[in-house]
Length: 443
Image (tube, rainbow, N blue to C red; front, side, top):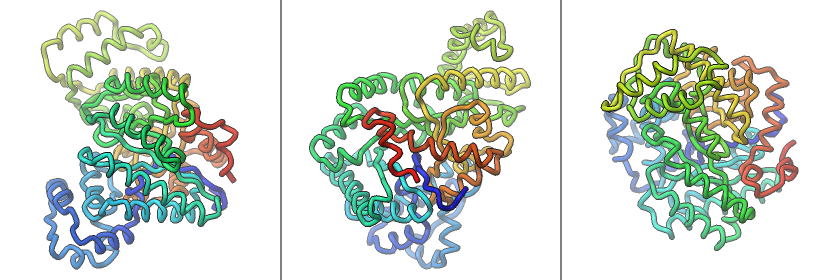
Protein backbone atom coordinates (compact mmCIF):
# COMPACT_ATOMS: atom_id res chain seq x y z
CA UNK A 1 0.00 0.00 0.00
CA UNK A 2 1.04 3.62 -0.64
CA UNK A 3 2.81 4.82 2.52
CA UNK A 4 1.14 8.25 2.20
CA UNK A 5 -2.38 6.88 2.55
CA UNK A 6 -4.31 7.25 5.79
CA UNK A 7 -5.90 4.18 7.35
CA UNK A 8 -8.83 3.56 9.68
CA UNK A 9 -8.03 0.87 12.26
CA UNK A 10 -11.38 -0.18 13.69
CA UNK A 11 -10.43 -3.24 15.74
CA UNK A 12 -7.68 -2.31 18.15
CA UNK A 13 -7.29 -2.94 21.89
CA UNK A 14 -5.71 0.08 23.57
CA UNK A 15 -3.31 -1.72 25.93
CA UNK A 16 -2.65 -4.44 23.34
CA UNK A 17 -1.11 -1.65 21.26
CA UNK A 18 1.75 -1.13 23.73
CA UNK A 19 5.11 -1.76 22.10
CA UNK A 20 7.65 -3.84 24.07
CA UNK A 21 9.92 -0.90 24.91
CA UNK A 22 7.04 1.19 26.28
CA UNK A 23 5.53 -1.68 28.30
CA UNK A 24 8.92 -2.48 29.83
CA UNK A 25 9.38 1.16 30.84
CA UNK A 26 5.88 1.27 32.34
CA UNK A 27 6.73 -1.85 34.36
CA UNK A 28 9.94 -0.26 35.66
CA UNK A 29 7.91 2.78 36.77
CA UNK A 30 5.35 0.61 38.56
CA UNK A 31 6.33 0.06 42.23
CA UNK A 32 3.94 -2.89 42.66
CA UNK A 33 3.32 -4.97 39.50
CA UNK A 34 0.48 -7.50 39.79
CA UNK A 35 2.78 -10.44 39.12
CA UNK A 36 0.29 -13.11 40.22
CA UNK A 37 -1.85 -12.37 37.14
CA UNK A 38 1.06 -13.26 34.86
CA UNK A 39 3.38 -15.81 36.46
CA UNK A 40 1.12 -18.82 37.08
CA UNK A 41 -0.68 -18.94 33.68
CA UNK A 42 2.63 -18.30 31.90
CA UNK A 43 4.32 -21.20 33.68
CA UNK A 44 1.35 -23.50 33.03
CA UNK A 45 1.20 -22.73 29.31
CA UNK A 46 4.84 -22.10 28.46
CA UNK A 47 6.58 -24.21 31.11
CA UNK A 48 8.80 -21.34 32.21
CA UNK A 49 9.18 -20.15 35.78
CA UNK A 50 9.42 -16.37 36.25
CA UNK A 51 11.53 -14.90 39.04
CA UNK A 52 9.67 -11.68 39.79
CA UNK A 53 12.46 -10.39 42.01
CA UNK A 54 14.97 -10.34 39.16
CA UNK A 55 12.51 -9.95 36.25
CA UNK A 56 13.80 -6.64 34.89
CA UNK A 57 17.39 -7.84 35.23
CA UNK A 58 16.60 -11.18 33.57
CA UNK A 59 14.88 -9.38 30.70
CA UNK A 60 17.14 -6.36 30.58
CA UNK A 61 17.71 -6.47 26.84
CA UNK A 62 14.81 -5.47 24.61
CA UNK A 63 15.31 -8.63 22.55
CA UNK A 64 14.88 -10.86 25.61
CA UNK A 65 11.83 -8.88 26.72
CA UNK A 66 10.30 -9.22 23.25
CA UNK A 67 10.67 -13.01 23.44
CA UNK A 68 8.59 -13.18 26.58
CA UNK A 69 6.06 -10.54 25.45
CA UNK A 70 5.43 -10.87 21.72
CA UNK A 71 2.86 -13.41 20.57
CA UNK A 72 3.96 -14.31 17.06
CA UNK A 73 3.37 -18.04 16.92
CA UNK A 74 0.29 -20.14 16.28
CA UNK A 75 -1.41 -21.06 19.52
CA UNK A 76 -4.89 -21.17 21.09
CA UNK A 77 -6.45 -18.17 22.84
CA UNK A 78 -5.29 -19.21 26.37
CA UNK A 79 -1.65 -19.05 25.19
CA UNK A 80 -2.24 -15.55 23.83
CA UNK A 81 -3.96 -14.50 27.07
CA UNK A 82 -1.01 -15.78 29.12
CA UNK A 83 1.23 -13.30 27.28
CA UNK A 84 -1.36 -10.50 27.37
CA UNK A 85 -1.38 -10.96 31.16
CA UNK A 86 2.11 -9.40 31.21
CA UNK A 87 0.46 -6.13 30.12
CA UNK A 88 -2.04 -6.39 32.96
CA UNK A 89 0.72 -7.23 35.45
CA UNK A 90 3.07 -4.39 34.52
CA UNK A 91 0.52 -1.60 34.04
CA UNK A 92 -0.99 0.42 36.87
CA UNK A 93 -4.18 0.95 34.87
CA UNK A 94 -5.00 4.14 36.75
CA UNK A 95 -6.44 7.30 35.17
CA UNK A 96 -3.06 9.01 34.84
CA UNK A 97 -1.56 6.05 32.98
CA UNK A 98 -4.65 5.51 30.81
CA UNK A 99 -4.54 9.14 29.69
CA UNK A 100 -0.84 8.80 28.87
CA UNK A 101 -1.38 5.53 26.97
CA UNK A 102 -4.36 6.76 24.93
CA UNK A 103 -2.46 9.90 23.92
CA UNK A 104 0.78 8.03 23.20
CA UNK A 105 -0.88 5.26 21.15
CA UNK A 106 -2.84 7.77 19.05
CA UNK A 107 0.33 9.70 18.19
CA UNK A 108 2.43 6.58 17.73
CA UNK A 109 -0.02 4.94 15.34
CA UNK A 110 -0.56 8.18 13.45
CA UNK A 111 3.14 7.95 12.55
CA UNK A 112 2.38 4.48 11.14
CA UNK A 113 -0.50 5.74 9.00
CA UNK A 114 -3.59 5.44 11.24
CA UNK A 115 -5.65 8.62 10.91
CA UNK A 116 -8.74 7.16 12.58
CA UNK A 117 -8.73 4.50 15.29
CA UNK A 118 -11.25 2.90 17.60
CA UNK A 119 -9.60 1.59 20.78
CA UNK A 120 -11.08 -0.95 23.18
CA UNK A 121 -10.60 -0.90 26.91
CA UNK A 122 -11.82 -3.41 29.52
CA UNK A 123 -12.40 -2.77 33.21
CA UNK A 124 -12.29 -5.15 36.14
CA UNK A 125 -15.73 -6.54 37.08
CA UNK A 126 -14.88 -5.37 40.62
CA UNK A 127 -14.31 -1.73 39.61
CA UNK A 128 -16.60 0.95 41.03
CA UNK A 129 -18.71 3.53 39.20
CA UNK A 130 -16.19 6.23 40.20
CA UNK A 131 -13.28 4.09 39.03
CA UNK A 132 -14.82 3.39 35.63
CA UNK A 133 -15.88 7.01 35.21
CA UNK A 134 -12.41 8.40 35.96
CA UNK A 135 -10.70 5.86 33.66
CA UNK A 136 -13.15 6.42 30.81
CA UNK A 137 -12.73 10.18 31.11
CA UNK A 138 -8.93 9.81 31.24
CA UNK A 139 -8.90 7.85 27.96
CA UNK A 140 -11.08 10.51 26.31
CA UNK A 141 -8.79 13.28 27.59
CA UNK A 142 -5.77 11.49 26.15
CA UNK A 143 -7.46 11.21 22.77
CA UNK A 144 -8.48 14.88 22.85
CA UNK A 145 -4.92 16.02 23.67
CA UNK A 146 -3.43 13.88 20.89
CA UNK A 147 -5.94 15.20 18.37
CA UNK A 148 -5.17 18.77 19.43
CA UNK A 149 -1.40 18.30 19.21
CA UNK A 150 -1.75 16.69 15.78
CA UNK A 151 -3.91 19.63 14.64
CA UNK A 152 -6.99 17.54 13.97
CA UNK A 153 -5.26 15.28 11.44
CA UNK A 154 -6.19 12.23 13.50
CA UNK A 155 -9.29 10.93 15.26
CA UNK A 156 -9.49 8.39 18.09
CA UNK A 157 -12.60 6.93 19.66
CA UNK A 158 -13.24 4.71 22.67
CA UNK A 159 -15.02 1.36 22.85
CA UNK A 160 -15.64 -0.29 26.23
CA UNK A 161 -15.36 -4.08 26.32
CA UNK A 162 -18.03 -5.71 28.49
CA UNK A 163 -17.70 -9.07 30.21
CA UNK A 164 -19.64 -11.81 28.42
CA UNK A 165 -20.63 -13.26 31.80
CA UNK A 166 -21.14 -9.88 33.49
CA UNK A 167 -24.09 -7.62 34.17
CA UNK A 168 -23.92 -6.05 30.74
CA UNK A 169 -27.37 -4.39 30.88
CA UNK A 170 -26.29 -2.62 34.07
CA UNK A 171 -22.87 -1.72 32.64
CA UNK A 172 -24.55 -0.31 29.53
CA UNK A 173 -26.90 1.90 31.57
CA UNK A 174 -23.95 3.12 33.62
CA UNK A 175 -21.96 4.11 30.52
CA UNK A 176 -24.99 5.89 29.02
CA UNK A 177 -25.34 7.83 32.27
CA UNK A 178 -21.66 8.84 32.06
CA UNK A 179 -22.22 10.10 28.52
CA UNK A 180 -25.08 12.30 29.69
CA UNK A 181 -22.96 13.55 32.57
CA UNK A 182 -19.83 14.45 30.62
CA UNK A 183 -19.62 15.93 27.10
CA UNK A 184 -16.12 14.53 26.48
CA UNK A 185 -17.26 10.98 27.24
CA UNK A 186 -20.33 11.57 25.07
CA UNK A 187 -18.08 12.59 22.18
CA UNK A 188 -15.42 9.89 22.39
CA UNK A 189 -17.29 6.81 23.67
CA UNK A 190 -18.82 5.27 20.56
CA UNK A 191 -19.27 1.55 21.13
CA UNK A 192 -19.44 -1.56 23.30
CA UNK A 193 -17.53 -4.75 22.69
CA UNK A 194 -17.75 -8.37 23.81
CA UNK A 195 -14.37 -10.07 23.81
CA UNK A 196 -12.15 -12.42 25.84
CA UNK A 197 -13.06 -16.14 26.00
CA UNK A 198 -15.82 -16.91 23.53
CA UNK A 199 -16.44 -20.58 24.23
CA UNK A 200 -19.50 -21.14 26.40
CA UNK A 201 -21.15 -17.80 25.58
CA UNK A 202 -23.43 -18.24 22.54
CA UNK A 203 -24.82 -15.09 20.86
CA UNK A 204 -28.36 -16.10 21.87
CA UNK A 205 -27.45 -14.95 25.39
CA UNK A 206 -27.04 -11.39 24.05
CA UNK A 207 -30.07 -11.29 21.75
CA UNK A 208 -32.24 -9.17 24.05
CA UNK A 209 -29.31 -6.86 24.74
CA UNK A 210 -28.76 -6.27 21.02
CA UNK A 211 -32.47 -5.53 20.63
CA UNK A 212 -32.36 -2.94 23.42
CA UNK A 213 -29.32 -1.18 21.93
CA UNK A 214 -31.04 -0.91 18.54
CA UNK A 215 -34.17 0.53 20.14
CA UNK A 216 -32.17 3.08 22.19
CA UNK A 217 -30.06 4.11 19.20
CA UNK A 218 -33.17 4.98 17.22
CA UNK A 219 -34.70 6.86 20.15
CA UNK A 220 -31.58 8.91 20.96
CA UNK A 221 -29.03 9.02 18.10
CA UNK A 222 -26.78 11.56 19.88
CA UNK A 223 -25.65 8.87 22.36
CA UNK A 224 -26.00 5.89 20.01
CA UNK A 225 -23.49 3.07 20.53
CA UNK A 226 -22.44 0.16 18.36
CA UNK A 227 -22.08 -3.40 19.58
CA UNK A 228 -18.83 -4.92 18.34
CA UNK A 229 -18.87 -8.65 18.86
CA UNK A 230 -15.88 -11.02 18.86
CA UNK A 231 -17.40 -14.14 17.32
CA UNK A 232 -16.14 -17.15 15.39
CA UNK A 233 -12.59 -16.35 16.50
CA UNK A 234 -11.96 -19.14 18.99
CA UNK A 235 -14.05 -22.32 18.79
CA UNK A 236 -12.10 -25.13 20.37
CA UNK A 237 -15.32 -26.59 21.78
CA UNK A 238 -17.40 -26.82 18.63
CA UNK A 239 -17.48 -27.66 14.94
CA UNK A 240 -17.06 -25.07 12.20
CA UNK A 241 -20.77 -25.64 11.49
CA UNK A 242 -21.81 -24.41 14.94
CA UNK A 243 -19.20 -21.64 15.00
CA UNK A 244 -20.44 -20.38 11.60
CA UNK A 245 -24.00 -20.36 12.92
CA UNK A 246 -22.81 -18.16 15.81
CA UNK A 247 -21.38 -15.64 13.33
CA UNK A 248 -24.63 -15.55 11.36
CA UNK A 249 -26.76 -15.17 14.50
CA UNK A 250 -24.62 -12.29 15.82
CA UNK A 251 -24.98 -10.51 12.45
CA UNK A 252 -28.72 -11.04 12.08
CA UNK A 253 -29.52 -10.12 15.67
CA UNK A 254 -27.88 -6.73 15.30
CA UNK A 255 -24.15 -6.74 16.07
CA UNK A 256 -22.75 -3.83 14.06
CA UNK A 257 -19.29 -5.27 13.51
CA UNK A 258 -18.11 -8.86 13.91
CA UNK A 259 -14.65 -9.36 15.41
CA UNK A 260 -12.70 -11.84 13.26
CA UNK A 261 -15.57 -14.19 12.20
CA UNK A 262 -12.86 -16.67 11.14
CA UNK A 263 -15.20 -19.66 11.36
CA UNK A 264 -17.46 -18.60 8.52
CA UNK A 265 -14.59 -18.12 6.06
CA UNK A 266 -12.07 -20.77 7.08
CA UNK A 267 -11.60 -23.68 4.69
CA UNK A 268 -13.05 -26.75 6.50
CA UNK A 269 -10.34 -28.92 4.92
CA UNK A 270 -8.09 -27.53 7.67
CA UNK A 271 -10.01 -29.82 10.08
CA UNK A 272 -10.30 -32.92 7.90
CA UNK A 273 -9.59 -36.10 9.88
CA UNK A 274 -9.92 -34.43 13.28
CA UNK A 275 -12.45 -35.10 16.01
CA UNK A 276 -14.42 -32.41 17.82
CA UNK A 277 -16.04 -32.82 21.23
CA UNK A 278 -19.05 -30.52 21.16
CA UNK A 279 -21.60 -29.70 23.89
CA UNK A 280 -24.93 -31.34 23.05
CA UNK A 281 -26.70 -27.98 23.44
CA UNK A 282 -24.65 -26.61 20.51
CA UNK A 283 -25.13 -29.67 18.34
CA UNK A 284 -28.87 -29.55 19.00
CA UNK A 285 -29.06 -25.87 18.03
CA UNK A 286 -27.15 -26.56 14.81
CA UNK A 287 -29.28 -29.58 13.88
CA UNK A 288 -32.49 -27.62 14.56
CA UNK A 289 -31.18 -24.71 12.50
CA UNK A 290 -30.36 -27.05 9.60
CA UNK A 291 -33.81 -28.63 9.78
CA UNK A 292 -35.57 -25.24 9.92
CA UNK A 293 -33.62 -23.95 6.89
CA UNK A 294 -33.01 -27.25 5.10
CA UNK A 295 -34.42 -26.20 1.70
CA UNK A 296 -32.47 -22.93 1.61
CA UNK A 297 -29.15 -24.44 2.77
CA UNK A 298 -29.51 -27.34 0.29
CA UNK A 299 -29.23 -24.89 -2.60
CA UNK A 300 -25.57 -24.40 -1.63
CA UNK A 301 -24.63 -28.10 -1.48
CA UNK A 302 -25.71 -31.50 -0.27
CA UNK A 303 -27.05 -31.78 3.28
CA UNK A 304 -27.82 -34.97 5.21
CA UNK A 305 -31.43 -36.03 4.72
CA UNK A 306 -33.96 -34.49 7.12
CA UNK A 307 -34.71 -37.91 8.62
CA UNK A 308 -31.04 -38.42 9.42
CA UNK A 309 -30.82 -35.02 11.11
CA UNK A 310 -33.99 -35.76 13.10
CA UNK A 311 -32.66 -39.18 14.10
CA UNK A 312 -29.38 -37.68 15.37
CA UNK A 313 -31.29 -35.02 17.27
CA UNK A 314 -33.29 -37.72 18.99
CA UNK A 315 -30.23 -39.88 19.75
CA UNK A 316 -28.19 -37.19 21.55
CA UNK A 317 -30.99 -35.84 23.75
CA UNK A 318 -29.71 -37.36 27.00
CA UNK A 319 -26.00 -36.80 26.45
CA UNK A 320 -23.83 -33.89 27.58
CA UNK A 321 -21.24 -33.95 24.79
CA UNK A 322 -21.00 -35.54 21.40
CA UNK A 323 -17.86 -36.50 19.48
CA UNK A 324 -17.98 -35.47 15.83
CA UNK A 325 -15.51 -36.76 13.24
CA UNK A 326 -14.59 -34.33 10.47
CA UNK A 327 -15.10 -36.51 7.39
CA UNK A 328 -15.10 -35.58 3.69
CA UNK A 329 -18.91 -35.45 3.90
CA UNK A 330 -18.81 -33.07 6.87
CA UNK A 331 -16.27 -30.86 5.06
CA UNK A 332 -18.60 -30.64 2.08
CA UNK A 333 -21.64 -29.98 4.31
CA UNK A 334 -19.72 -27.28 6.21
CA UNK A 335 -18.63 -25.50 3.02
CA UNK A 336 -22.23 -25.34 1.84
CA UNK A 337 -23.37 -24.04 5.22
CA UNK A 338 -20.64 -21.38 5.29
CA UNK A 339 -21.65 -20.17 1.80
CA UNK A 340 -25.27 -19.97 2.96
CA UNK A 341 -24.23 -18.05 6.10
CA UNK A 342 -22.06 -15.63 4.12
CA UNK A 343 -24.90 -14.85 1.72
CA UNK A 344 -27.22 -14.12 4.64
CA UNK A 345 -24.59 -12.00 6.42
CA UNK A 346 -24.18 -10.03 3.18
CA UNK A 347 -27.85 -9.03 3.50
CA UNK A 348 -27.33 -7.58 6.99
CA UNK A 349 -25.56 -4.33 7.89
CA UNK A 350 -22.83 -6.19 9.79
CA UNK A 351 -19.18 -5.54 8.93
CA UNK A 352 -16.47 -8.13 9.55
CA UNK A 353 -13.31 -6.89 11.28
CA UNK A 354 -10.55 -9.01 9.79
CA UNK A 355 -7.17 -9.01 11.52
CA UNK A 356 -4.80 -11.07 9.33
CA UNK A 357 -1.92 -11.60 11.80
CA UNK A 358 -4.24 -12.25 14.75
CA UNK A 359 -6.21 -14.77 12.64
CA UNK A 360 -2.99 -16.50 11.66
CA UNK A 361 -1.74 -16.74 15.27
CA UNK A 362 -4.79 -17.10 17.56
CA UNK A 363 -7.05 -18.52 14.85
CA UNK A 364 -4.22 -20.90 13.97
CA UNK A 365 -4.84 -20.52 10.24
CA UNK A 366 -1.91 -22.67 9.15
CA UNK A 367 -2.26 -22.47 5.38
CA UNK A 368 -2.53 -19.22 3.41
CA UNK A 369 -5.06 -20.88 1.11
CA UNK A 370 -7.30 -21.54 4.15
CA UNK A 371 -7.28 -17.90 5.38
CA UNK A 372 -10.86 -16.61 5.77
CA UNK A 373 -9.99 -13.24 4.23
CA UNK A 374 -9.71 -14.89 0.82
CA UNK A 375 -13.28 -16.21 1.01
CA UNK A 376 -14.62 -12.97 2.48
CA UNK A 377 -13.27 -11.17 -0.59
CA UNK A 378 -14.47 -13.86 -3.00
CA UNK A 379 -17.99 -13.67 -1.49
CA UNK A 380 -17.97 -9.85 -1.59
CA UNK A 381 -18.60 -9.51 2.15
CA UNK A 382 -18.22 -6.11 3.79
CA UNK A 383 -15.04 -6.13 5.87
CA UNK A 384 -12.29 -3.95 7.22
CA UNK A 385 -8.64 -4.79 7.89
CA UNK A 386 -7.35 -4.09 11.40
CA UNK A 387 -4.45 -4.83 13.75
CA UNK A 388 -6.24 -6.19 16.88
CA UNK A 389 -3.28 -5.99 19.31
CA UNK A 390 -0.45 -4.49 17.23
CA UNK A 391 1.92 -4.13 20.21
CA UNK A 392 1.83 -7.75 21.31
CA UNK A 393 1.64 -9.08 17.72
CA UNK A 394 4.53 -6.87 16.63
CA UNK A 395 2.62 -5.46 13.65
CA UNK A 396 1.07 -2.23 12.32
CA UNK A 397 -1.75 -1.30 9.96
CA UNK A 398 0.43 -1.20 6.83
CA UNK A 399 1.86 -4.62 7.58
CA UNK A 400 -1.67 -6.01 7.94
CA UNK A 401 -2.60 -4.67 4.50
CA UNK A 402 0.64 -6.14 3.12
CA UNK A 403 -0.28 -9.48 4.67
CA UNK A 404 -3.72 -9.28 3.02
CA UNK A 405 -1.97 -8.63 -0.30
CA UNK A 406 0.27 -11.66 0.23
CA UNK A 407 -2.91 -13.75 0.61
CA UNK A 408 -3.93 -12.75 -2.91
CA UNK A 409 -5.97 -9.54 -2.54
CA UNK A 410 -4.84 -7.09 -5.21
CA UNK A 411 -3.89 -3.43 -4.69
CA UNK A 412 -7.06 -2.05 -6.25
CA UNK A 413 -9.28 -4.21 -4.06
CA UNK A 414 -7.32 -3.28 -0.92
CA UNK A 415 -7.66 0.40 -1.76
CA UNK A 416 -11.44 -0.10 -1.88
CA UNK A 417 -11.28 -1.78 1.56
CA UNK A 418 -9.17 1.10 2.94
CA UNK A 419 -11.65 3.72 1.71
CA UNK A 420 -14.73 1.78 2.82
CA UNK A 421 -13.33 1.46 6.35
CA UNK A 422 -13.98 5.16 6.93
CA UNK A 423 -17.68 4.45 6.32
CA UNK A 424 -17.72 1.57 8.82
CA UNK A 425 -16.93 3.61 11.95
CA UNK A 426 -19.09 3.12 15.03
CA UNK A 427 -20.56 6.62 14.78
CA UNK A 428 -21.85 5.93 11.27
CA UNK A 429 -23.07 2.37 11.91
CA UNK A 430 -24.97 3.36 15.06
CA UNK A 431 -26.63 6.30 13.30
CA UNK A 432 -24.90 8.95 15.40
CA UNK A 433 -23.54 10.77 12.34
CA UNK A 434 -24.27 10.71 8.61
CA UNK A 435 -21.91 8.68 6.45
CA UNK A 436 -20.69 11.78 4.56
CA UNK A 437 -19.23 13.14 7.80
CA UNK A 438 -17.25 9.94 8.27
CA UNK A 439 -14.98 10.72 5.34
CA UNK A 440 -13.54 13.86 6.97
CA UNK A 441 -10.32 12.16 8.07
CA UNK A 442 -9.88 10.14 4.90
CA UNK A 443 -6.97 11.26 2.80
